[in-house]
View 1 (tube, rainbow, N blue to C red):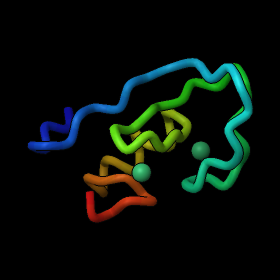
View 2: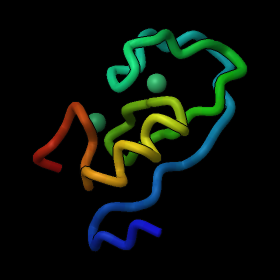
View 3: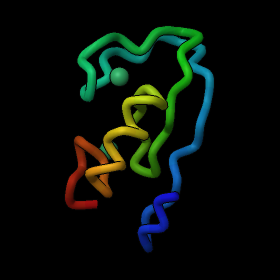
View 4: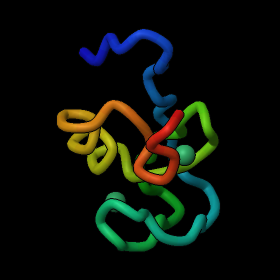
Length: 65
Ligand SMILES: [Zn+2]
Ligand SMILES: [Zn+2]
């Protein structure tokens, strides 16, 4: 798993409200989608952020965190 110090695993959740766009795949986050909530409160598709974390350790929108 991703054991980067200081960066918690995102919380997995099922989205209940439309939350706009996932900046990784540029598709809409729709109710019913499995999403991941990051510590910075950004939300992405679970599958998208899992792939993102294979090559990055931080939020796509908050790379400095
Ligand atoms: Zn996505
Ligand atoms: Zn963020």
